[in-house]
Image (cartoon, rainbow, N blue to C red):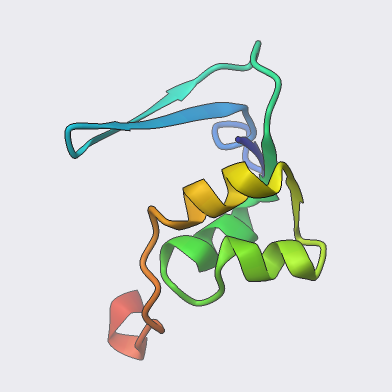
Amino acid sequence: MEVNDSLSWNNHIWVLSVKNGVVSLEKSDKEIPEVIVDIQTLTKAMFGYQSLSDSFKIGNVLGNTDEIETLDKLFVHKKAQLKDFF
């Protein structure tokens, strides 16, 4: 997954894996990304505001639809509440 952001520490290609319920995220800038997303869209997906699949439909996520759906399944799909942000 390639994340585009103005902050250099986020602006990389990342490999996300889940094994036995343990999530790992590693920088791997040599990989070819299967999903390209900006940090705002990724954050919305992670907090359940807008799914990656919906963001793909409006052009805010690029890439392989199967990979987008797989990644999307890892995130919360309940609408965020105001208390979630404070």
